[in-house]
Amino acid sequence: MKLGLYNRIVIHDKNGKLVKRTHWKISKSFVLQFLQHIDFMSAHSYGNQGYSVPIKDVNAASITLWINQGAILYFAVFAGDNDSGYGILVGTGTTAVTNIDYKMETKIAHGVGAGQLDYGAHSRTAAQVVGANVDLIISRTFYNGSGNSITVNEIGIQCQTVSPAGGTYSFLLARDIITPVAVANAQTLTVQYTFRTTA
Image 1 (cartoon, helix red, strand yellow):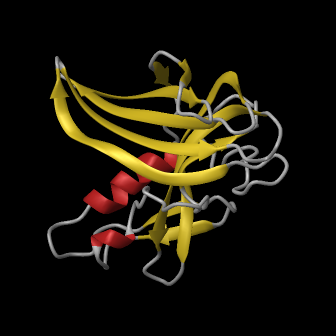
Image 2 (cartoon, one colour):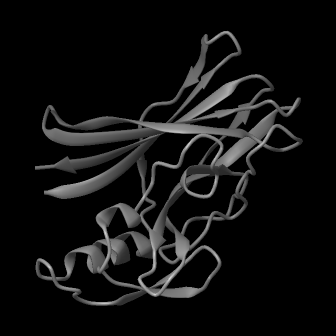
């Protein structure tokens, strides 16, 4: 059994016509914070606190996390419309990914100003058996209303998690450098990630 992550880029014009769709590509992008979240959320017996795990957030602060509150406060990825604080993110950075990356290199800001993209809501397909695999697909759409073309070089996934000691923090889970994709003004970019297990 193996766990993999794949990504795909889709672009539509202002009329909804498909402009570009890449093939699914293997992501080599899970970073340390991904497994640290799995660690603190699973390393406990039912109803008990378990282990505490220090995890570096996107501001390079070490945040100690453990289970003692409702599950809705952990590992949240589905940011809402206009929320660029977490979820699937896009950027212009080009530096190669490392296991200890803790933030996007140069995240594109939300908005319709110069160099900005409008961050949409997330969607998903429920986990299901697809041939020899089990797939879960998450997607997010970004609209370019900046007036100029914007080139996306990096994509990633970030979550929000509450600290039992107080405060909510963002953590990078995955980051990919992709073949540069130019998003023209009035075009819509959709980034899709597939989480896949294979027997």
